[in-house]
Length: 60
Image (cartoon, rainbow, N blue to C red; front, side, top):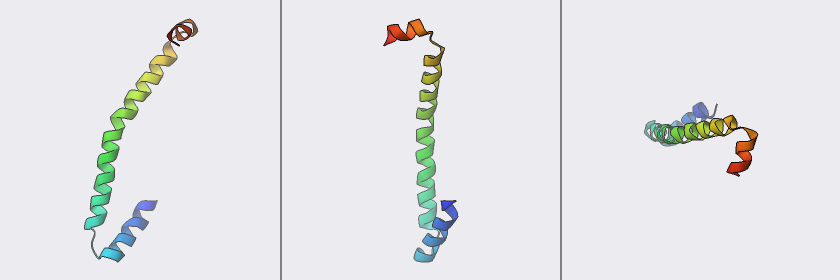
């Protein structure tokens, strides 16, 4: 919901969409880099949930 408002404000201030495209491009790249980290964390949590209670006590 912030995207259109931010795009409009940047367009009014700079009279160009170039800055807006750079900002959203940077945000897209950041999301692309963060995504694998989140996936690895989810896999680790699922793996920990599969351990039995006895194994959890040993691993602590």
